[in-house]
Image (cartoon, rainbow, N blue to C red; front, top):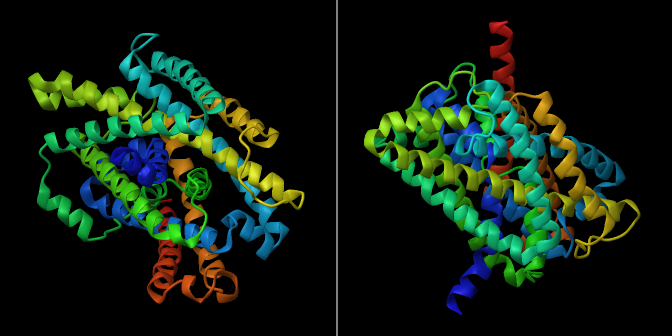
Length: 420
């Protein structure tokens, strides 16, 4: 009974962690660590903290008003918000789904090659495995229901967390440099896009909105559940931060990962064999198991959660309300089938490294938008009540998030201009 109660408490938080930790953390953090070293660690911590703050804000809005943040934005700010967000959601969904399929295919190629060795074989395996795992995910979501989804996600995050963190510790990293990388924020010249990508990837982006739908599945519907949700989110994002830090440590220990490409997972796994010597094969397969758990759980989470958003927007389009979403409804199923099939084109059209970076940056654009929305929506006492308004320190955090992304964008434009 006690174990069951614990799982009920941390369930949605685990889903947030498992969905947010995937292609974004695994590929982007490892590539950033290989390119920038441990100097990027602070971005992982800040990114996870910002996602906690944002998710707490949207949860506070939902429990205070009884409406999802999406419904609140549409009803309070007008129909243009609906159509603008719907357009953004379509673009983001294609990019993130294609990136997840690519990452899932690359990881399975590293575990069990089908077409042999070499870049062309890796690309072929990426397409086959990516498509196959997408179909498996859609089957679990469509016919397994929320409870099966929750159990599979819990198992996947346990595998990915234990194996990847253990791998990072076993590499005996320089702990002094790790502490400096966390405590002293730096943005090396030309690195702003990687910093944004890391912060955008860690902990998810658009998928943070889905926490509101998951707590409805758990029966949390009023302000009495807010403290429970805060603990739930704190545990989820703490795990997210630790995993992201571990991936940067692994990437920085491996040195430059030349070219990225569809053989990235193979390069990392083979480099681990070289580093660990006789224990190399164990390290290799442990890392690959954790990598697969991270990517597949993220895919499964996105496949299950994004259709909630689409179905919510579809109901609001016709003047309806965002009551508990029926996963058997046509809008939910249509979005599920589309997100699991149409982005398969991305497996053919884009290379792995470029896809990871582009989707992470596009996702990061959502962070300042959400911060601005929460500054407005949770700043009105007539909307959320005096007790649920943003406190002064939270206003400062949200404003700082907006300022950071404006500054990071300006730095990147400056570096690109002078390097042109």
